[in-house]
Length: 140
Image 1 (tube, rainbow, N blue to C red):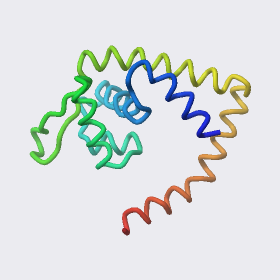
Image 2 (image 1 turned 60 degrees about the vertical axis):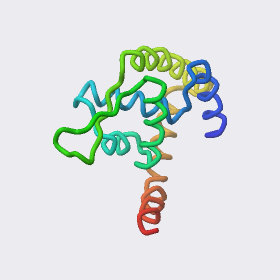
Image 3 (image 1 turned 45 degrees about the horizontal axis):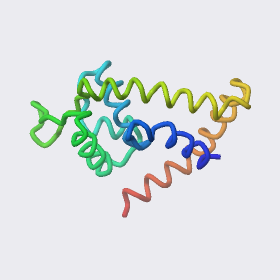
Image 4 (image 1 turned 180 degrees about the horizontal axis):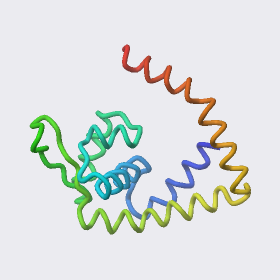
């Protein structure tokens, strides 16, 4: 089911020349920027649940497309802050609508309350697995 959902999102994002991870980071940078100001790359990775190194690489791609700017953090010369550009905001808004439509279409056969109950149960039962995987990744 996860692969089918990912394919649906990939198809929805294709017209915007965005991968799912690019969309997640663009939307996450926008969301955090609205609430906290331009986030650091590390904060964005934490918020998005992505690897910090991959986050940096994907942000470099988004920066090359003119969708984000990475600027030095005035408080920490090693850190970069991520700002969504005007073009990035316009694309994020259009892509967000497409993703919401894809989600609605994909999950339409399942009553909303049932879907939320199943997702909540899965997220609770998978939390220990995710924690072990994270620990293994940091021990390597």
